[in-house]
Length: 524
Picture 1: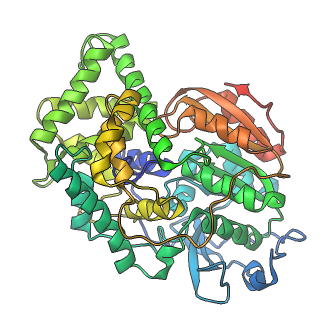
Picture 2 (picture 1 turned 30 degrees about the horizontal axis):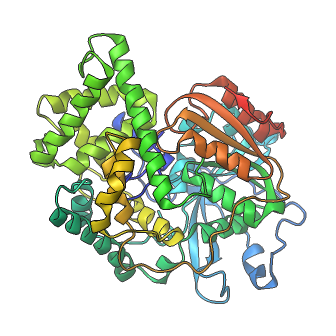
């Protein structure tokens, strides 16, 4: 599923939406249109009556935000769009405000409608409006028939006052740079690139750049819940969306309705441990991919797992020495692009044939498909523009949530542990520890210790060979949440719902539609 953003080089936590929608674009689904109505758009469906108590504000100062009513209008041919007004700073609700972009995919069977399902694809930084717009790919029919799927672009992303950090050409260079510097000089350049992006976020964006934290986005979700007329939140969050959802549950445990957190992030660990464990997750996924190739026989990578891994590692090393030509307007495949082109298809086993094609082509001296995968992964269009700001917002949000960083000259001391966790990706993830080094703003609210006491049962889904959010994170999150219920999918790829496992799908759907809580520890 298109979920992730630039791993390591830009952040550590992946976002579901990116890889899924990239694959959709590869097969010709291109919908980057603005949130405006079309000539053949139908009138919006009637707004359901608000449930009792849904608009009660947590504090009197927020009453005007909790009492607002959404005005939906046709957009993107068949969908409905609106905006939600929230304060820039919840510590000063009388100050500046921001409009959050919303998109609704109305329930296909309105007479059987259960309610609104708010969704977030991850990132941080992925636009939720695009996730809702592509709900036919992300959710099975039984969900889309019974729920209005509501996507919102979190503050600072998509069409919600997006942070802007670099020009398109500078962002090209940022993505293409070597994610594993080979010398102290390259290490300093790498660190300077991080600093330039963070300084650019502050210089090129308004004051919102200091208020794009997960805590504030979770507070926005409660305002959205109220505006939707729901007394409790029904929510599906994937990847980073699980961090957003668990944060919401901790802030508003009495407003938790039915929450599904799929591809869970462990909110109890810091950036360093997260990087080590995510590097190991991608190594597991890569080994699974190579082993599948070997098991099929006549594998183009080699006759054994070790030989196949060596072929891939050698290819990346060769590209580091000499970029590969492509057929994309004279552009070349640089080593950074090669890395992102490699990891993107690991998010979903269905994309492994794309990786076969890309690697075979690159081994023959043509970097076209790897570069195209890298472009789609970073939301870069063929004309050189970026269709959203997720490649920038992800770092702005992550560094506000957790500004931990180390200087470049300390990275070599970290490499042995990272290489032990991941011989292929370890060094790259070690260097990502410098991501937040430099000028950046500080969060206005502390990050909570997530346990959500008193919340209704919350379903957490983990996949055993998930590259971006390792399975143990789901186990830990389910344990941390006082009402957490764990579902395990034994499989490959990022996230577990709608990944071809009926056991997972039916358990999630029964929970969302009927409130049937699956047994804790359900093994699928």
